[in-house]
Image (cartoon, rainbow, N blue to C red; front, side, top):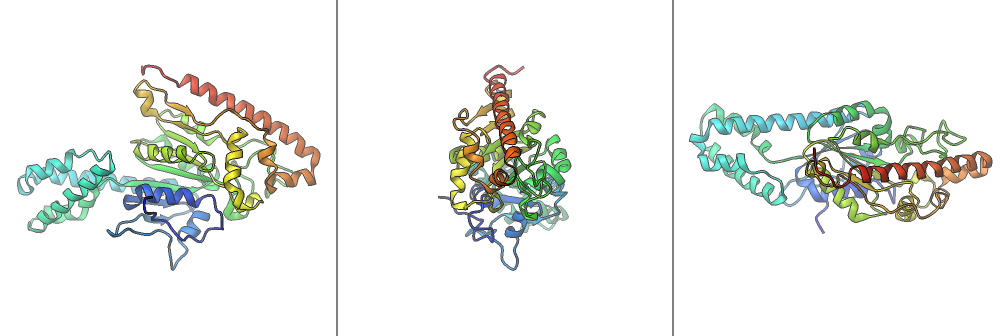
Length: 374
């Protein structure tokens, strides 16, 4: 029921990426900064002279910018570093100017945790009061504080892009950001098909899919980006699919934003390049989860420090054969017609891969279950 601040995009009809962006704009849009990797999302996100990124009645909305395909993670990290520096500068000046501004207001600004939307709204009230007092002062410190005063309000930095960026060309930068401790949120809208280039093979392409440079089906499995991030131990990680479980999707994105550190949300995004009518996109998302191809989970390091279960396996064990999901899509079933024997071999390997991956996630759910923190 919240107002979306992402609307009327130029994406393909039935695009599986845009609902995630709309959700982020509803939850955090009036204080969000978005670094967008080049790709589909940068085209429909910045198709000038119009833009789908909007603002609310208060004139607030997401600040959006697009960098290159290969350096978007670093670009978004730069946004976070700039915001942190502005906040630190503003706090330093506040402490110096307590006598001029009043200790009560200064303490209110410095001590507000801004851990909830109500606290963030209250911080905006304090900042408005601060601006009024600064306008009455003539000092250089007052003028300097005016330039960074908005940095006292908590911002939400989102680094967004597709699988071609996150799994492949931009992965080194993504890994660099995940290895750090800055509070950034990363949304990977995973179509698995390098959508913006027409569907070439990448490290996100699943086994058995036909793509450019893989006309006879991809022979190897897909990189498990989530497990790689979990291995750091300090990164919030979630895999979501709103067609499979919309409540889990909302919960994961809210948890990711609330986590004070790097967070990674990998979102299943059906795409026109999958080769079927996208009016069945949500059904395919559900089948992907039911087959075990796309397990849903959340890993929250904060819970581990509290002695609670940090890994939550949010989908049930595979209940249907993998082919009930795969062969609804042209990227998989075309191989049955062109290379039937190869298709059968790759399907068997992919089914075994699903079983192995599910066992790994079950092991994590047990290993990272309820236990006291060391």
